[in-house]
Image 1 (tube, one colour):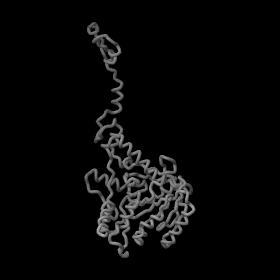
Image 2 (cartoon, rainbow, N blue to C red; image 1 turned 45 degrees about the horizontal axis):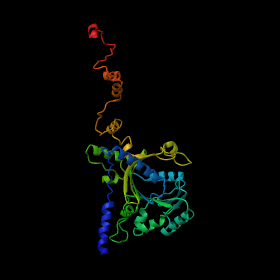
Image 3 (cartoon, rainbow, N blue to C red; image 1 turned 180 degrees about the horizontal axis):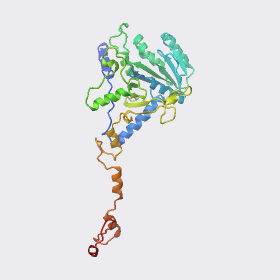
Image 4 (cartoon, rainbow, N blue to C red; image 1 turned 180 degrees about the vertical axis):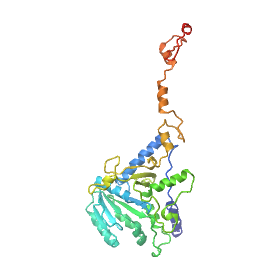
Length: 371
């Protein structure tokens, strides 16, 4: 019975977790203002909590990138905030040649065997029992190709109550076809990683997201970029790895099992701070000068439609393609008008007397004045 049930469980996991097609965020225009403000405040605090590694909110964070958008900006932001929070950073390299500036310990695992670099990681974490540690693996593709059955036990040994794991997986690198045959009912390595991760970040290029949004608004077919175009010799699409910032799609799973999905935009550091030779790499954020600015994608000026900006400045209500409310000048003119019944209410019991104040353009008529 267990053997027959195994394929059904794995097929269910594959069906739920293998959907890699990016879906743009749906703006909550019809959501009540109170619920919308609560969602925005909660999700903004959540992303800052995850980036700052507070309260061990995510033991295993998985970052999915591709040739269209690298995960380096997000990893740099994690290390910058770890420095500010006095978090010990251990960087395990499988493809990075130089030590990142904000990494405390750099382990070159690309020329070591699996037991050898595991021992170096254990030695790096041995003297930091009371301090929070951020362990970064710059890619999981080699381990997924060489040790797929031992992937889950291996990652479990790296996570402790004071150590959080941050790992990158390149989605556009296929697994080798000539790998030794394994259990036919075992899920794919990427499916297993998505199942184990408590937080999943998917990186997108801002240029590509804007192009897809423009196609959706015009009911056109969404464009493809890079390898998805299917053209011979095309590896990267136009606008890949833009310097203005990256779009981050987040999926966080709480201990209760409730999931939170949100889209953010992480701006790039200013050129002046990016070129500094020392100190923590700054990002020009709202909270502190050394943090990057993480905002909602729907608040980005290039993503936000002009119609929504015009309606958001009005008096509220349902949004449309144009503003139905009065303009600012019309409001001022309306407030400045003094109607006759205002003075009649102040006069008391004078009956139906009509009070009229002559204006500068009115002509004085003696007969009407006598009446």
